[in-house]
Image 1 (tube, rainbow, N blue to C red):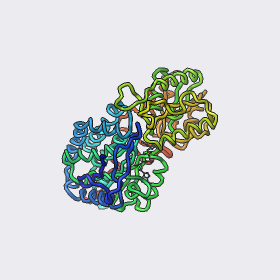
Image 2: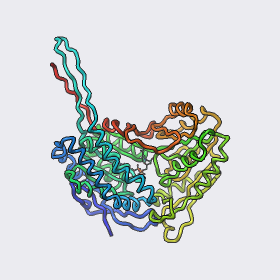
Image 3: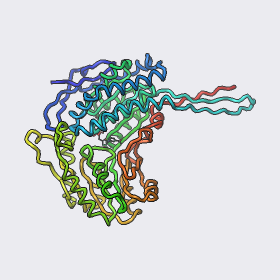
Image 4: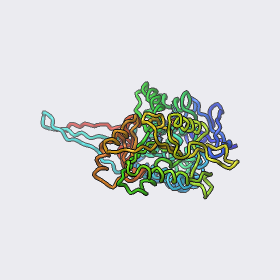
Length: 486
Ligand code: NAD
């Protein structure tokens, strides 16, 4: 049975006390392997290695060389593309086309884009007058923050982890990553690539394990960590913020969402159906940017519900390797229980179940997998739990609306504010809506169309700070001002 180890100071290592935990397949629940269960000592060793690396070759490395090294990491990922795809498919159970065409290529892109940005970022300077007339010159320099703690989730594990590791390293920091316990494989694999392309030991470290009172919390409370970047649930963000407060550590948070999809009667109907289908059901609904609340202008409501229902009923569940299958399981049995409890709750609250609501019929060898049906509800009050709370599963509630003002109020009546997708041919209205909806990202006639130079993050309880493009530099570097009297 294979064990996934930590990656500390350039070496694969078991946990200091030899403990492991089981990793099971989401597809059929078989025991895939064991994973090192991070201890306080492991976190100590990783943070120590990261600190030493800052004082060594990495800390002295010229920017050009660092940039070249990050390009080499991206090329190394591309060279081992099939290994990354296989590891991510095994951990998540998601279809090959999603992993191979979207998630793994983005992992490589996350290194290239920030390497290129750091090379071209201008410095700030101010000439000032002084009473003696001689003047003074101020200029600001960017310095790495130090050791960055990276805590990442399971839903697109490689993409989301590298989205933080890429800019952190481009800015000259070192990192200790605590990947999700559900998806450990690609983080450790990336360690192999780091060694293959000659990244100095200690620059990139991985400690596996759980969150509360375990590796995650040990990392967020560690005195040697200078800043924490986290993607995951809002309530986990609150726990991490408390832990970070004791050490006055900076945080960057990408948190949960309960995103609204808005369909106007004047939209390109087929494109809107396909767009909302993707946004609600891609990755089995396990996308932070996903749509779980759909608002459809009344003249096209019935037609839209029928079209989305037909689209859901056409999905084919199966293994990533099955060429006939285009739909994967949820990440785990635990998550399946959570999603199914929301399915029951919706019915108890009086929902009309348009489609789904349970578990699909699967062949015997997959019967133990974390499968659930794509599900659509109508008829619920906006206060219902499935309309207000993030479920993070393949489901949405659809409600008709009659006016632009009404739908803006509906969309904003939620504690989250991550993203929205609006479907209309009226661009004047689209601009108005984009200004009025309280989210970090608005897509018009599209969804998940990402230019990595743009600011990414959530409003309200969906996050703190923005990453992406030059905005990542604000978090991963510290500006220092130098004032020279002339
Ligand atoms: P989670 O919060 O349960 O776990 C995320 C990570 O935090 C894991 O590595 C976990 O071990 C760790 N963790 C848990 N408790 C901790 C603690 N007390 N201290 C330190 N670390 C701790 O989230 P998840 O279930 O893995 O991911 C799904 C969530 O992530 C959803 O809410 C989703 O919306 C959100 N998400 C947000 C974005 C975004 O960009 N805004 C992107 C992807 C996912």
